[in-house]
Amino acid sequence: MQAIGWQPQRAPDGAPLHFERHRPEQTALYCLVQQHAASFIAHTEASTGAELPRFIKDEFDAFLECGILAHGFLRLRCGECGHDKLLAFSCKRRGFCPSCGARRMSQTAAHLVDHVIPHVPVRQWVLSLPIPLRLLLAAQPELVTPVLQVVQRMVTRHLLGHAGLKADEGHGGAVTLIQRFGSAANLNIHLHCLVLDGVYRCGADGSPAFIETDAPTDDELHALLQTVIARLMKMLTRRGVLVEAMGQTYLAEPDTDGGESRTLRPLQAAAITYRIAFWPRAGQEVLTLRGASLREGIRKAARGQ
View 1 (cartoon, rainbow, N blue to C red):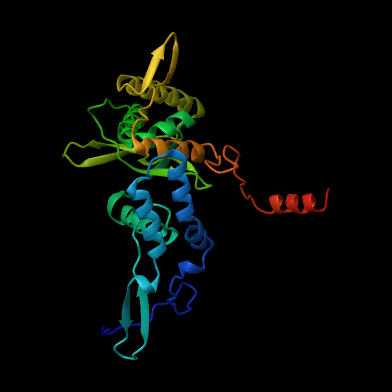
View 2 (view 1 turned 120 degrees about the vertical axis):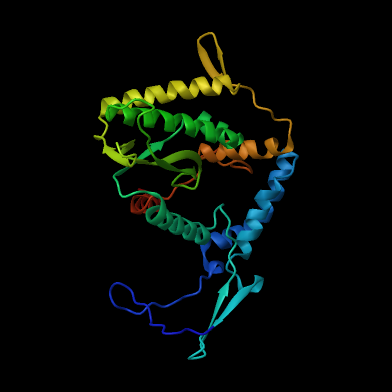
């Protein structure tokens, strides 16, 4: 690989950039998966009497090969100095691989800033769902799109109203990132919506003109949330996943006949509620590390305080 007119790149502080190969086999997550993935899969299938879906096993297998030279690599050689670098292949998965996830996150952010989002104010709207609906969307991912459509329509209608426009007089814009996990890597489907903080209206010459809107007040947010809740309940009831009876609304009885449902449902329910799914401690809450305060608590417990 010959570099023509190449100049060494430098960091903002002037220091030369240095490539260091990622070594996933030295991380705690890799060791954890390597040591316990096989027993976890075997115990889950034995407990539920059904096999885990193939995509879950493939995710573990691909992660254990990601960044490992033994599973393939590129040899990069400088044509001038003859120096070699080895670049291991990556899994490019969307599950829990930190390296591939971070790379995709950076690439997506750069793409949105450089090529998608116009140079106008943008506000982030986050929709968090109650635990029963999180479990519903995890079990039936095809419902995520209609849920998002309801949210986008209500937010756009709110912005049009603030701009003094009717529904056919302007257009909003948004990009939504569907996040499936919480800060503890627990199952938590929620929506991060990057919404233009205003609407576009066609001018007299046909060119779009952006109308910026004021920030919503607490009362406006509360009213908008109540509208979103009502529309979501109506949509989910119409689709048959919610049932209304005697003034109460509850989830319809899920279909648990399939093997995939028998294995995934207890895992999803446990992950959403921070519980352990199987083995002797099944049903107990997981231990979450939260910095120095927890460490100090452990020290005091060890000292009998």
